[in-house]
Structures are given as C-alpha cells and as structure tokens.
Length: 192
Image 1 (cartoon, rainbow, N blue to C red):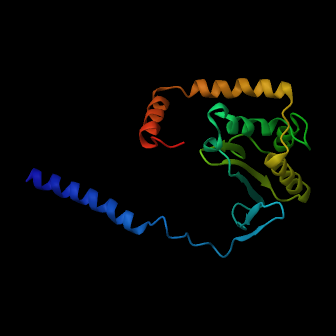
Image 2: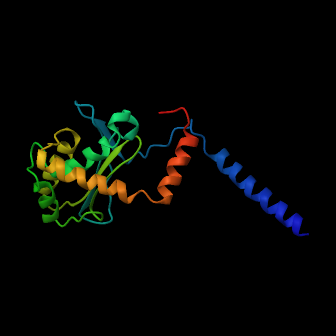
C-alpha cells in the first residue's frame, strides 16, 4: 500500500509540472495591458507609463539598461555593477553627494524607495517618488537620465566605490556562492 501511495505521489508531482509546462510556451508573446502607455524617444529609449491609484501621490520610476555581466569581456568582470554604484556618486548635472542628498530630501531611503541592481543582462535603477510637486518629478527624471549616460567617474569617488564593490564581493564568498558558481559552470558550459 505504501508503494502505491508513493507511486501516486511521484506521478502526481511529475504530472503537475508537465501541466505547468504545457500552459507556458516561451514562443507565445505575453499579452500587453492596453492601459499601459508606451512609446519611444528620438534617442531610442522605450518608455512605459501606467497610472496607479494606490498608493496615492507616488510614482515608481524604473530605468532598465540592457547591459549586465553577460556584456562584459573577461577583463571587464564586475564593470556593469561598478557603473551602477558610480551612478549615485555624481553625474553631468549632479556633483558627488547631490543625488543622494536630493533623494533623501524628498523622503527616499536606500532599499525602500531607492535601489539599483545589476544582473546578467540588465541594470535596473529604481526610484519611488512623491508626485505632489512637478519639480520633484522633473528632477527625478533628470537623475534617471544621468544614470543612463552621464555618470561621472571622479577619481576620489572611483576609489571609494571600488572598495565598496570589493567588500560586497568578499561578503558574497560564502558556501552558497561557491555552489552557485559551480552550478553555473555546469548549466552554462561552453557559453559566455
């Protein structure tokens, strides 16, 4: 009896995954929400705007740059992540410290309202801003525009941020990171 129950559980488990696989087909395009306004600027930037009712008076701004670790050569490993860090240290329109000071002055905090991340194929900057003042919206958009291509790389900020990124890397060298690295080598053998 126990063998039958185990067999049925295994059969159910395997069958449930095959049903999920049948429902998802990577060749089927996702349905686009008609409520989302989209367009493309002259510089090639594609934008999406979706009005939210909750929470009130808040805008979630995202800048997604299609550059991550996969676009790096061997001698450039970590560069996309480093540029992500440098973006907060000054740009064409903001001196070192001004971006953080501005964002904190409108009530933003790292993590909760302000963050960035670098993945294999993209770098994402995230801002959550109040919408009650058009000047804040305009300045926040300028921050994102600078993140997209006007980051400054002043020597002192460069050296300071290099130390931060190295410490982040050292902090990630636990057993789970070693396992992840080994799995990546197995799963993506002979790929870049």
